[in-house]
Structure formats: C-alpha cells, structure tokens
View 1 (cartoon, rainbow, N blue to C red):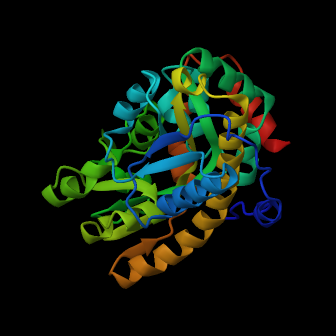
View 2 (cartoon, rainbow, N blue to C red):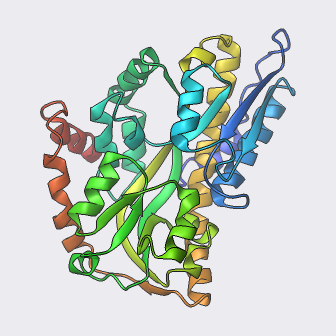
Length: 326
C-alpha cells in the first residue's frame, strides 16, 4: 500500500520561519507516549524536539517521556485538561466522548490511502471540530502523525474472520477499535500498551493489534508468532494538550509549536513507511510467520461498525466518503 511521503522532501527544504520568542520566558512542555525509546515514534519526537529547540533559539523545549512514564493516555489527558504543561499521543478514537463524529475517522477499512485520509484532517470539517474541541478543553497540537497501518499479532494464525472467534485481542480503550475487533469475531480486551507483554506471557490475551513497528518495538513477537496483515485501520494520530495551558501562550509561541509539529508529522510519514518494511523482515528472522490474508471478508465483517453509532450526525459516513473520493 502506498504510504504518504509526498511533500516531505520539499517541506524539509523549506525551513520553518524562526519566530522571535526571546521576549517570553523560556517554555518547557512534557511529551508523553506509550512507545519505547528507539521506536519510530520516539525517533520522530526527538526530531520535533530538536527542530523546536533550534527554531525557538532554545526558548521552547520538549521533555520526552516514553514508555508511559507519566501514566496512561487517560491519565495524561486528564493532567493536560487540568492545565499542566503536558501533551500526549492520542487518536480521534479517544476523543469521541467530546465529539462522537470524530470516531468515524478511526473506522475499519475507511480508506487504504493515507494521503486521502490526511486531506480530511486538513479539511474545513475537521478545522471546525478542532475549534469545538478547544472550547471543551482539548488543544490539538499535531494532526498529521502517521502511526501506521494496524495489523494483528496472535498466538494462532488468522487467515479469515472465523479464525478470530474465541480469541482475546488487546485493543486500546476506545469504542471504535473495540467495535471493529468485535465485529471481526474476536473478544476485544482494552488495556494500556505497557501491560500487553505480560498479558501475552500470562495468557490473559491471545493477541494484539497495532502497526508492525510498534509490535516489533514492544518485542511482542517473543510471545506471539503469527502476524496477520489484515490492514484494518490506517492510523493517523494526534498529539493533544489542554486548552487551559495553551491559551496562556503567545501567538508567536503557538505558531512555532504548531509549525514544527506539522514538520514532525511529515517526517513521521517517511519514517513509518521505511520502518514497517524493515520490521516485517526482522520479525520473520525471529521466527514469526507473516500471513497475507484476503482482507475482503474482514472488511465485510467490520462494515457493521458504521451502523452502530446513531449519535453520529446523519449522513456523516456518506459525507466522509465523498471527501475521501475528491
């Protein structure tokens, strides 16, 4: 599948305009994420931190906290909404409590073209959602991070939806992924990413879904040896903070943070594309069987998800499909 790297090289050739922030006090922001040091996401965060430090002339710095060191995604989000200087990796799937419509962007098999999906995140529709979220206390800092395409790593081979029956599959604790995995036949088991390895070891779960780079970076292949490339979700991620904190920053600071975040998002699209190919080969070397099933039955089984959310704005699915096709 074609991954988006178009525009990255061009963007990197155009330096982000440095904005004078010397008049403001030095600013430090904590960045929390579940991924481990060395994973592609961690690499992108270091890229962003270096870029922001350089462009701000050392006046704005990012403190990186990988491996859930600041707590779960829910914990960090609550900290952010209380006004703390922290941002966290998130997804629209985690923001459905604030706006149910956003969940559709985390629907199974919505599109297999990241480029089209990124257009939705730059659309007027999403910009309106962004502004509405700010009024509810959520500030989106980055909206173009390509986390990857989510696959399933399990202790048993999965070639058809029937193979998922009876399997307990770890999912993040958001309704869209719970619904998708359930529709495909498995029992979704929400838990933080940091708890997955021991859960696999102890038999609490039978498998886990995530992009290949995360499955490899978390060393989950040590406990599960069947990687099924079902491609069920193209995962665009967000980094979010609390409006209570970001509303205290100057326009110059905000623009610099947002501009460098966007550049880091472009960088993620290249890093993810390269990493997934490399990690599949490394997992094969570790004894993992890589399965390429016909995804049509999985897509058909999961289509029911789009009928399970009556709280969505009427006609939302048709509207999003129309925008994806443009």
